[in-house]
Amino acid sequence: MQDFLANIAARFGVLKGILPLSRAAAARDAVAGVQLASMDIPQVLGYARIAGMPAVTGLYTVFLPLIAFAFFGASRHLIVAADSATATIFASRLSTMAPPSSAEYAALAGMVALLTAGLLFIARIFKLGFLADFLSRTVLVGFLAGVGVQVGIAMLGDMVGVSGAASRSTDQLLLVVRQAAHLNLPTLAISVLVVVAILACKRFFPRLPVPLIAVVAGIAASDIYGFAARGISVLGPVAGGLPPLSMPSVTWQQTLDLLPVAASCFVMIVAQSAAASRVFAERYHESVDTNADLLGIAAANAAAAFSGAFVVNGSPTQTAMADRAGTRSQFAQFVFALVVVVVLLFFSRYLQYLPHCILASIVFTIAIGLIDVKTLFAIRRESPGEFTLAVVTAAAVVLIGVEHGILMAVALSLLRHVRHSYRPHTMILAPGEDGVWVPVPAAPGIQTAPGLIVYRFGADLFYANDHFFVDDTRRLIERAPSAVRWFVIDASAITDLDYSAARSIGELCETIKRSGIEVIFARVNRYLRSDMDRHGITPIVEERCIFSTLHEALSMAGVEKPDGPVRGMT
Image (cartoon, rainbow, N blue to C red):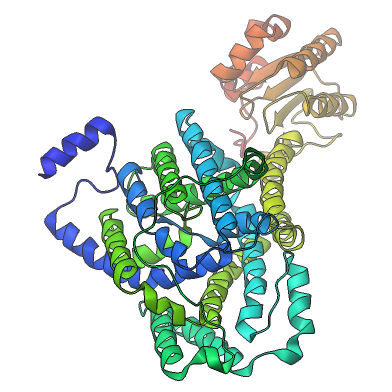
């Protein structure tokens, strides 16, 4: 049987996250799948609350979408289900288009999932998995911290028993503060108890499914003591049975309005899913197929759209939870989905007694977990500039919204990359102690040896930064302590030369050579050499002055070696 499945999988490129699977591994993953279900079911109910969807739709996200990714995805560890980040992204926009939990709202959420699936499928066709690399880990940490703060604030109303909601986090916080005199003490007491229990057990008994215990205990207590009659808000009737299969019904104009929301979800899904799958693949020395995972997540979102659910994502939090439960393949997710079917068919009616404050408290602890304080402090200690980017991103999410926050996160990541290329580190070999040549920041008035300057530009040359190269070169030559006869360019960091930069460099070399200075290129790789040939720089510099090593370039300048070894640029 396994050989038959292996042949099918190899032929159609499916079940990569499951096969190969031995009987012992299947038994292990089955147990882990049941344990994961006990921990994760309360969380997906909470994610439905974040998304503004009926509670039962949280269960829908861990049924057909889970199976779809297990079938088409490649990662053996990634959990694709409801996630707080994507739920917050589309909820912040949909709440302005329709009342939360309404039929129209659910249809809009389904269309967002379908549009997201389409974008992911297009990304798979064009093999755009590399896009995940453009959202830096620093900015992602800041973004998730901002989402954590926003979600935490959104849950405060249910946790203290005050009515009313606002679309902006600042307005929601002010609303709770203004109504503080009307808070419901029993609701607050239950919320505090649940939050303390979850956080304490997470530290001391991490395998204990405290959220599930809180949900079961809350349902039982609510039914026995009549919480609803005592002013403690409960979910109310919850639809049971398997999800109905239907196409989301929205207008053409609504579809167009939802495209930016789907694009934001797409960016977050690509970034988070790739990060999570890579982390656990490296942990278990497995290969990563980001493009196959894109297909799996696209299929999962399509399944969510047609089964009344909402956008699903490769969740780092739930993937870590699955790893702690002992899952080692997607077979565990099939078992998880089977447990969800049992809950939908036989136990969903009991969810009507679940107090909103318990669900909000569970979500609140999830939100706290999104704020990675340890990593933020590590970033601050190692790179204050990147820490500032993370904080700005978090503040943007809280103050201007998740949808704009993720766009800012992408923009900041790209700007940081461009900034490094735009103004790279430049160095010059200069005499150090004991006759050793050492790289120092390039500054006028320094030279490597009498008549010699060895200069290194630390990035590719393109239209935006070529003037730095030109200006540096001119200043170094003009203000050198002695007349320069050889100007050696260490090109080890230059792999690309565009048209604009080539014109600037060619004109510079011609000017330098006319003044009697020999221009020598060292450590020229084949990519740069190809660009130099194509743009006509090679004839200007002359073939004899282009070398693949620094040693050959120094020999050309009549310098066999310095009095001591060369450090840092050899």
